[in-house]
Image (cartoon, rainbow, N blue to C red; front, side, top):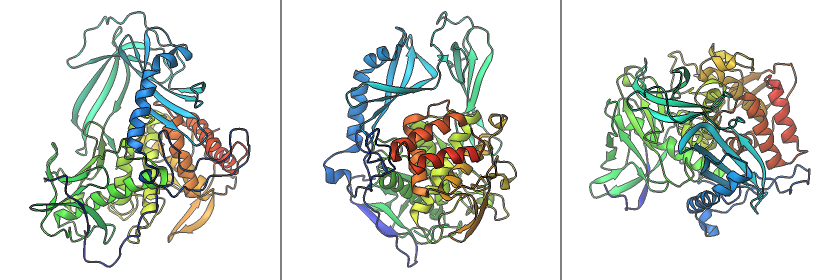
Amino acid sequence: MNLHTTPHTSRAHRGTRRLAALAAVAAMVVAGVQAGSAVATPGDGDARTAAATPSTAAALGVNPSAQRATAIKSAQADASSAAKALKLGGREKLIARDVVKDARGTVHTRYERTYDGLPVLGGDLVTHATAAGKIKSVDRATDAKIAVASTTPKLKAAAGARKVIWAGHGGAPVLAWETVEKGVQKDGTPSRVHTLTDATTGKKLHSYEAIETGTGTSQYSGEVELTTTKTDAGFELTDGERGGHQTYDLNQGSSGTGELVTDDDDAWGDGTGADRQTAAVDAHYGAAKTWDFYKTALGRDGIAGDGKAAYSRVHYGENYVNAFWDDSCFCMTYGDGEGNKSALTSIDVAAHEMTHGLTSATANLDYAGESGGLNEATSDILGASVEFFADNASDAGDYLIGEKIDINGDGTPLRYMDKPSKDGNSADFWDENLGGIDVHYSSGVANHFFYLLAEGSGKKTINGVDYDSATSDGSTLTGIGREKAYQIWYKALTVYMTSTTDYAGARVATEKAATDLFGADSEELKAVSATWTGVNVK
């Protein structure tokens, strides 16, 4: 394998369609400018919005990944000062995870916390400071004071347990043991269940599943262009233009990396599930489109913002009807569906899985309760946005999730954003019981919010698909457009949400984001507020 050869663009099958060249990067993130940031300075109170800046990082002579690393290093050097400004206890320390400077000059710094050297789970926070370093406001995962009577547990730990402070979901911080039980879920998905147990009483405090599921000639996208790498022996699915993303074949295995997908002549797949390369074509293409969307539309250099790629694994297991993201490998994995003939590798599914990595690298929304629903919705929202961005005639953008993969066996999509309850399980509107249902169904409220914010209520047809979306209070909503909607969601996720954000918190976060991007008196902000009310988040 030669990673230093020139990236090579190939045709994936014998078709005629070629994709248009990507637009230039619209904005810079991390010590740069976020896409869509408002021109108006704080206090202007108008709705003027910055036009996209057609400049790339290279043209500006800067490296976003290097900037990010430098900004995080600087934030860590100043972490003790930030802790004092926040009046944290003397036993607490801050660990900088991310830094974003927006167009208004506000510096948003995301921190994890420790207490006597122990990780504080649910103790994350984001500070919002002036360019001079004065903290203007802070968003915390918990408002509770981090303090425990003792860091010496009374109960013996299970094998492999980690000692932590648990401060999540509004409870008083307690000394806890965190255990991780590995296994396999009913559908064949790997399982890694994290359980928090009170180290004094033995009471179970919290648990969550860490494996986040989404549910050439490509099978779903027609003829596509792939960026591959030439080697002495032929070609391999290594994308040197996008952080070195690679696609592997697990050959129906369920562990390890598998074999890097290679080819003699750089013509990949035949568009059917019978050809093993076809699934790899779709996965590789979906990863490229997702990378391009984040960089072009949102100015983000890779999932974690560090310029490094994740990788993809196809042909997982036997008759495995799912796909999943795993933080431990920083990778996406796809099954082949019933009869191993319809891999779950469509554009929106690929983007959905990669977006779980984005969420993990930013707000790290806990994969349980309402925050888990927001986690899943984020993957649906940005997954659908990538599908529109890809502008592929064979898989046109829509507000349906997984409509190409036929996971239900009857041609229906997995989820509907205009009316989530059409799947028979998802919620259209918020109610007090929402946090108690599966995160794939509680996500419906945020999916519905995004659709209404982008497109508005009532009947309409978009790219040949009919939609009819209603509000909980019968109000009529006018959409602000998809691009503004995903810019607002992305900014809320990356600089305002924390690990424990619930639906009420998501409303506040998106209102802050809309204010930053479009102004305090903007129609966009009014639309965000009205749309949340329209899905009963008040």
